[in-house]
Length: 348
Image (cartoon, rainbow, N blue to C red):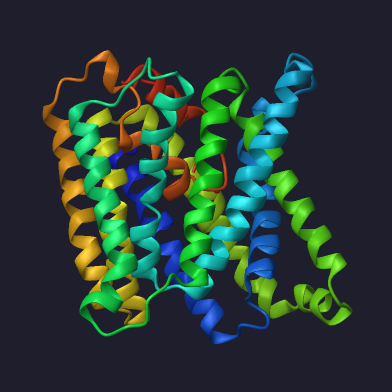
């Protein structure tokens, strides 16, 4: 029986949205064992092993030899930005900020790309009015989230460390995506994914080795690895594979609807699993984010795209929100063509 494409899309969006709440649930239960470095190190190890199995057909020496040396450099730089810096900073942000705050600030990546693409093209490429409206609404939402607490709710002024981590990770993911769109479109997705996971896994093991002996020993506990067996499989490998299948099988408008719905799904999971409800500042800023999400969905379903729309927010945001740590080639194909073929561009 053939599995409908929309089921793969639901699986990808649902698992990626659920990941933040499960991370915080584990971290709250035992922060010594389930800290950022331990979770990322162990989950990427499991993700590397399982992803290598799923993508083994791409992993041939002949294909690797066909990749020019300068492309390997860009792969290395993109992997450092996405699988090391971006992953580490985003998980630190998850640890310190509420899920609602994370959901709002993750949308910053779409704004960064809307700003970056015209600058890098010397303003040869400019966003459409609709994309500009969506980016503006998102920016207003993020700013209000950061300033509403002292203005309206008697909170202290300033930005928290967790919020800084989320914004910094969005910048890392943005630059990684731009590198991928510019230099890595011809790299086989399996090689790119496994390379990034391999670099991330090795890097975090080295980080753990550089810490005190007690911190390194905490990485090798049965409690951690028993949880990371399912965490790495269901929140790194499976959603990535679901996403690749979804891109092959569903329309662009359905993909956009699924991607943009992650913002809401992530909030719902936090309320159900953690009993964590958006605070006042997030409600104020999140209302503008919600407007941009609804606008983006309407845009994808009812607007006939022109060539100027190729860089729209719906797909540019994928690396940070859905594909964050794994692989981007398929999403780049969508960004570059403005359409989805009957075939596939990571969300680890």
